[in-house]
Amino acid sequence: MDPLIWVPLLVVVVLMVLVIVLYNQLVGARNAMRQAKHGIEVALTQRYDLLTKQMQVVPAAVQAERSFQERVVEMRQARPAEGSSVSQLEQADRAMDRAQNAVQVTAEAYPEFRANASFVELQESVHYVEEQLAAARRSFNGAVARLDDRRQMFPSSIVAGMFGFGTEPMFRAQEHERADVDLSGLRDQVGGDGAGSGR
Image (tube, rainbow, N blue to C red):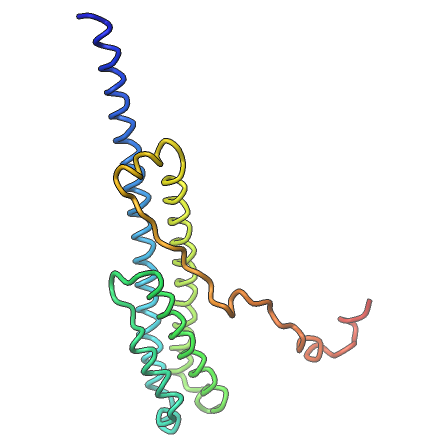
């Protein structure tokens, strides 16, 4: 057979193999991103369930307060559904933060409530789930970054364009998480202008 026929055939085979490899890498990156997003959904659902239980052990007098009830309603409306967008997950996270803050304010106002074993146990569980949620966010953002790298780098960018590979926005930190930490009261707590503040 004529070698001039083999050369173009070989080029076509190499290109097909390259497209297949790049496509599979893009699919793997997209699936990793989706799995990481599912991790956020799971952690938010666990947090929702724990906060709901925590709110149920709040004293009846507080449960009757309008502001507390508003937080409960807001949190229930924000329960994450499977397949939620990143924006919806962020909204659910913010609503749960506000609900958690309402529970914390309640605990500070009722010292005997803060000593309640059920509340303390639930609070520890919430903190644990919040750590899992933070890890899930980092994992998701890393997966989004890896997929974006593959989508933008040559030659996989061509394959991504051919097959319509999209991406998700990254999970953004909330305003209070981005703000500088206020340490103005720290000096008073450690003794004002004592040894810790001298220069």
